[in-house]
Length: 322
Image (cartoon, rainbow, N blue to C red; front, side, top):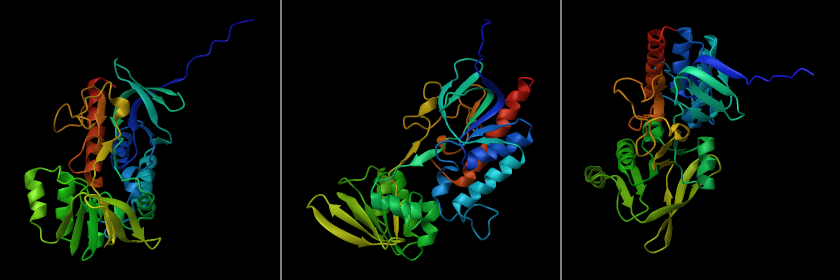
């Protein structure tokens, strides 16, 4: 009998986009319009962090605001209009050691891409309390972004958890909008720089509670009404009335799969090989959005870097004669 030879089905493409937030979709729109025929894998959280944001009022072009999920659906539709191949699933393994960029999906499908745009984003860290997750999913008062959501709590009282620079920065931002900000710090001191800690301490409507942990986010089932906390120095429990609960304990960039090939900083963010571009240390691999941005973390800045990554990828291909 003749032997049956089974060829491994390796897919060869011009541009692979990994991740599907504002950065990934913007990159897809630009890459598709440049006839790069991009393939996008949406990843673990299709639409990215914005899908956990109820109202987006600071993205230009939406005078009446839009919900995060609706914006993502519109971006996806726009990318598909230009024939981006949008796929569910995620990349679980990569090999960037040779001139061909190899990636594998969770079901073992192998892809060889001339260019890759990493737009895997970062995930906000939460306390993990059941009550916190309940109100986060409902969009009823739990947030990990004061700049995104602080506006909705104007003239109200809020609680923020965190001890680092970004927690102090967000508390200070909220203090300009809210009547009172209660800051819960787990240890007996800030982790923030002295200048940031001093700024918070000098702000009259910020109350700082050290040695204090959140036990439960309280609410009426739909909206947050307060927080139950414990002072670990004396084990006294108390309830703090608030309408918003902000978590500022950091973000985790979704970059672990690339760590053997791509230069990361000490917290896992991708380092730009050339400031002012989207280039990584691997030729033909570019990064956009929160996977490399620990400073701004906004939908609009992510979209901007998505555009940059697609243009950089297009120029890379042109220089290669593609």
